[in-house]
Image 1 (cartoon, rainbow, N blue to C red):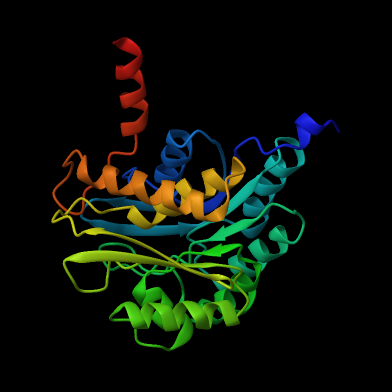
Image 2 (cartoon, rainbow, N blue to C red; image 1 turned 45 degrees about the horizontal axis):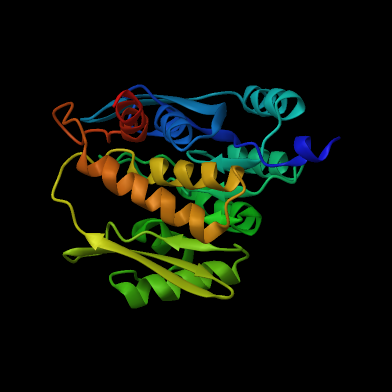
Length: 276
């Protein structure tokens, strides 16, 4: 294999659930990876029936089909980074952990547990499986406050809570943790990147909007695209964070509930600059 072939090329394998509403899940992931300059391939774990008003049905796919999708991608196209999202059950967590062990590609683990409208997307007995199998395999773990509380047993209601939870998740084996602050009260939203060598704060004013469906999926995938393109972790996180912030600001206001973000804004900006 030549040196060019071994260089990161932005290939991202996404292992997650499908969102028929297009704002989160596989659909949001593909849009985010594409907008950030990567190439998205997928292994779908479940088909959900949802829109901005909520999740109306969840239909898991067979384990062998999930693995077959991932293997088809890895054996041919390859992956420079892998992003996991909705896994749903202990059995899927176990199968995905085994898949991760067959590749050297770094894994960003988004421990998806609850949809924006409140529907459970991870079985209660699967939380321990995520804790024991996915966290130690995570190059980066991206929990929100409720997810971090479920994984650590700690209360996360402020920056100190984010910091304590992040350190606890590092102790469980994650190589880095991005503690998202969207659920933490306050006029300023603070995401805290915690690594063994220190921490980085990303903060901005809270945007008053109902168009927040898919923010977690989108952020995780945008960061994964950066990692797949060979960016250092801090750079990938910062660029992904800035992308999502602008995507929230430009949200198109679709639907009657929690609307989607504007995933495509960088592509339109690039097109507009090229047209001038």
